[in-house]
Each structure stands twice: as structure tokens, then as C-alpha cells.
Amino acid sequence: MRSVRATLALLVLGATAASSVVAAKPIRPTRPRAMNLFSSAGYLFEVNRQQCGLKNDGEVCVAFAGSPVGGGGFWPKGTPDQYIFNSGLQIAGIVSRTAGFAWAGDTSGAFFFDARGDQLMGNPLSLIFSRLVPQDVAAWGSTPPTKTVLDTSIYNPILIGSDAISQGDAFVRYWEGDPVALTGREHPMGIAVDQRILAWNFPSGNEDIIYVIYTFYNVTARASSGKYNNPTIPSALQTEIAAIGDQFQDINETKFKIQIPDGGYTLDSVYAAQAMDADVAVFNQNYATAIVPFSLGLEYTGTFIGDVGWQFPADIFGAPFAAATGFIGIKYLKSPKDASGNQVGLTMFSQNLNSATGFPDPVGVRQLWRYLSGFLGPTDNPCNPNDTGVNIRLRRYCFLGQNQGDARFYQASGPFSLPPGEARSIVVAYVNAAPLLVPGFQQGATKDTKPGTGGIGLTAVPGDSIR
Image (cartoon, rainbow, N blue to C red; front, side, top):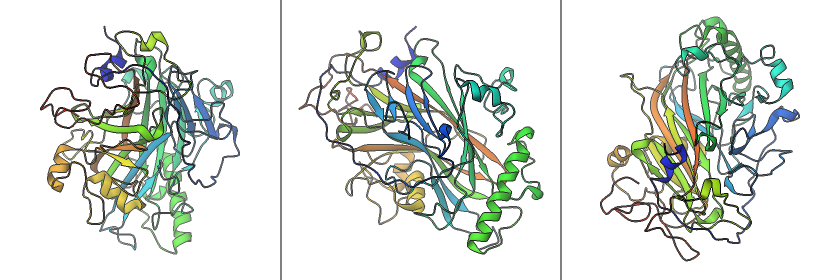
């Protein structure tokens, strides 16, 4: 059976190896966070061949203070081959217009990942717990938060009640409900997140994949409202999630001198996205594109040339694959459901850029909602190729850059409604893959493999609509 990594590689063309010198990546502004005094505020997740730095504010595959490798995401582990600068969850929605207080109708959201670096809104509610750290294993069942596998909507029934299910589970809880983080928004949204990361070294190909499970809670209601006693939250979790609701109400009522209804408020027209600044090899030679039918977004370098010192181990990059820079992709495995009960999957993909031209990074939660929903405004840069808003939302992608750059991408899922006290989940896989060595590839300092449009670039067949 062909390995799992071949699934991604077969969708794109290959190249051969080389090397290049690269300019330094711009340093982004950051702000200090609570709880970063703890040693496990950062953790290097390296269960299989992916190496991914974690922070307890919600950033995934990111450099953290004290990291032994200094970067975000590397593949294969033990090489200097960096594929990810940082990544994480983005979410935006509209406070119900019938909420009954001053925030009604507001567009709100949260950058748990922010490519700009000055709008990060995540704050930790726990340390990072790893099944590979003996002290964490000893405290797993006795130290909050609850880390037991409980959600029957995600996990096989045989796994319910397990402390861990992979070869190295890592768990953290965080939120955006603290009003200390207001850059780009007027007030918090009211979301807490449980994040579990899983990885295995089997079967063949799975050693190049990590799985990220996000469960996000609407924590806008007080515990006394009873809103958390519902089937979307396992009963063993309801009390501790409800306590976060009390915390949210207390600090935000004090900060903004308002009275939030004890029953909280519904978040309507919500979009959740996994977003990434991938930085494959030479960071300013990158492209991002989507394979919409597979709910898959990916990034690669247009030259297929590795950075100085890159290594291409033969067990990964040998035939039928090429000894050249590969791909990092994000695949939706589970998404929220629409009103009919069907998973909505990937509903909007776009490349965005560290640039004022093209399709810049979103500024503020209002633009974030427009980007994730596909309902762009007159002040937003146009999609490429451009079309009517209706057609852009139907095709499910916005901007495919045709010039190499410091590309990032997001892939959103929605819309859905999130009532107070309820939870929703998304599950994504981070997949690394080597390029397939087939006729027709473009590789070299003067080569430029663009995202496919109408049979060029990554799509070699004229008229092929899969990008």
C-alpha cells in the first residue's frame, strides 16, 4: 500500500534538490502573556518525524522561549528543514442581535494565530501536559483541567475514558476571554478552547502527520444559568467549563461596566479557521494553494530549492519521490455541522501575504470575519482570480498569488451558530510530503511553479479545475 504521505505528493508535481541563501525572516511584535513563567508554557512536540513547538496561548508549530531548536515546525525531525513559522486557530462571528445588551450585533473574533504578530488574543488557562513527560503523566488525572478522552462525537467509543490514545498526546486549554487582549477588537468574543495533539509512527506514512483536535466552548454564560448542562459538553467537563463562564462574566462586566445576561449570548454566523505561516525553505519564495474537493490547503516553495544546509534523507525523499523541498498541508478531518446536520468542511481558502499589495494579512476582527466568510467589503483587496462574491464563495477559494512571497494561508469552515454553554469541534491533520518525481516538474533558481490555474503550475492537465 502506498504511504499516506504519497496521497499529498500525488496531487502535485515534483522536483530535484538544490540549495539557496535566504534573507532573514522579519521579526514580529509580540506581547507578554500570563503563565509564561512556567516551564511547560512551551513544549517541543516530536513524537514522530514532525517536530512542532507548542505554546499554551494556542500557537501551534511556533518558536517558544527555551526551545532547543528555535523554530516553529521542522520535517524531518533532526534536520534544519523548517516548514512552519507558526500557525493556529482563528475564529470570528457576530454577537446575536437579540443578546439584550450593548454588544448585541457586534462582530467579534479571536486571533489565536496572527501572522502580523500584534493582534494575538490567546491567553493560557493551563500548562501544556504531555504523555511523554513523567511528571505530567503522574498529575494527569489529578491536576485540572480534565484531560480524559470523553467526546463521543470525535472518538471511537472504545477510547472513551482513556487518558491518552496516541504515542504522545499533548493537551492544553486556553481562551481569548481576558479583555487585556483588545488590539483589533472592542471586546472579547467569549471562547475557550481545549486542544489535544496526537501523533503516531504507524502505519507507514503516519509518521509524517500530526493531528490537532480543537473543541471550543461559548463561555459567555454564568454557571448558575444551567447553560453548560447540555449534550455538546461531556458531563465530567460541565462544571469546570461553567467556571470559566463565571470568570468571563466577572472580568468583562468589571472592565466594560456592563451587565452581560447571566444566560450569556449566542454567537451567530461563526467561522473557524486553521491558519498558517508556513515558510517552506526560503520564506519569500512561497506559494499557497488549495485542493478544494479534499478540504486540503498546502504551501510550498516555487523554486523547489532547499535553504542552506537542508537535508533529504533517502527513506523519505528516495524514488519515486524527489530529493527536493516538499509540502506542508492542512487537511480538515472534522468540521462543524450546518442546520441539516452535515459537516460543512472547507468553505473558504485563501493565500494572504506579508505585504500591503496582493491580499494582505487581516487587520482586526471585522476584516477577519470578512476574510473567513468570503463576504469581502469595498475596502478589501480583491481575490485572484477575481469574480462576484457569490461565485467566489461557491468555488471556496479567494486569492491564489501568482508571485513568490512570504505567503500564509487560512482555510475556514462555517457558518454555524454557537449558543451559550455549548461546544463545537474541528479536527485537522498537518501533513508533510515529499514531491513526486514525475515528468513535467519545474525546479531551479530561475523556475517558478505557480499555484495551478486552468492547467498550469501544479496542475499539469489543461482544463483541470483542481488547484
